[in-house]
Image (tube, rainbow, N blue to C red):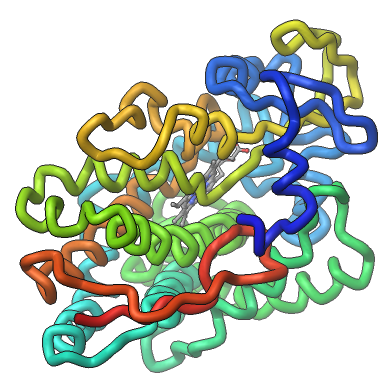
Length: 372
Ligand code: HEM
C-alpha cells in the first residue's frame, strides 16, 4: 500500500481517532461501525455530490452507471442486473471463461515451471472484461487490463476530479470497449453479457453504462487481491494448513479480504447537516471512508480466529451500493485458489520473487513469481 500511495497511505495510517476532519482532504472515518452507519445513511451521505465518485466518473462513463446514482433509479437498475450476478450465471461464466486457462496454470506449476501470478491474473481479468463487453475469445487482446488500469491510475485521493485531458483519454478507452458492447447488445446474442442485459430489459444506454462500471470496478481489484492473498498465505505459513483442510479456504479468503481491503477507501459527499460519531458535518463536505484502516484494526491475518466474520463483508461496502460483483469476485478467487492447491496439494507453493506496483490506485504487486 505504501508503494501505491507513498504520501497518502502513511498519513491516513498516522491519523488519530475514529473520525477527524483533515483540512484540504475531508472527513476521515476509520471505525467499522461508523463507516457502516455512514454507508447506510443515504439521506445525508451520497455518491453524487461534490467530491464524491460521480465527480470522477460521470465525465467518463455518463450520468447513470450505478456508482454515480442514488435513489429509486439506482435500485431499479440494480434489480434489473441481479440475474447477471446470480450464482448459476456467475459460475457458468467463470467456468466457461477461466476453466481452460486455469487447467493450463495447474499443469505448468505441477510441471515445475515458475509462473508470474500477476501476469496470469491480469490475463484472466482481460478474459473477464472481454466476456463482459461481449468480445469473443478470438478478439481477445492481452492489453485490455492495461487499458483499463490506465484510467484508474489517473485517480488520486487528494484530487476529486480528473483533468479535461485525462477525461478525454479515458473516454477513448471506454468508447472502444463500448463499441464492442454496443455490437453485442444490438445482436441480442444472450451468450454475451450485453445481449443478456437486453433480454433482461435494460436499455442500450443502461447496458453500456453497466458494462463500463463493471470494467472499471471489477478489473484491478481482483488483479490486486489474488496475488496478495497467495503471498499472505505463504508468508504466514497458512497455505499448507489450508491445503490440508480445504474448509479453511472460505475463512482464509475472508481474512485476506479484511487485511488487504482491495478497494481501500470509499468516498461520499454530505448532502444534509449530520454528524459522524462526535464530528459534525455539513453539506458539501467530502467523506473519506478508510475501510482498510477499520478492517486492519481487528488484528493480523488469522483464518482460525476469522475476525473477518464480524464485519459482514465491509470490504465489499454496505447498503445500497454494496459490491454488485461480489459473487463474481468470490467465484474467481475460489477457482484460482483451487487451481493452485491442485498444483500443490501439500501447500508447498513458494513465492520466488515479488515486486510491488507503483503509481496505481489499487495497491498490489507488479510481479509475483510462484513455483515449487
Ligand atoms: C475483490 C474484489 C472486489 C472488491 C474488494 C470490491 C469492492 C467494492 C466496494 C467496496 C464497492 C462499494 C463502493 C462504495 O460504496 O462506494 C463496490 C461496488 C461495486 N462493485 Fe465491486 N469489488 C470487487 C470486485 C468487483 C467485480 C469483479 C465487479 C464486477 C464485474 C464489481 C462491480 C461493482 C459494481 C458495479 C459496484 C457499484 C455498485 C453500486 O454502486 O451500486 N466489483 N465494489
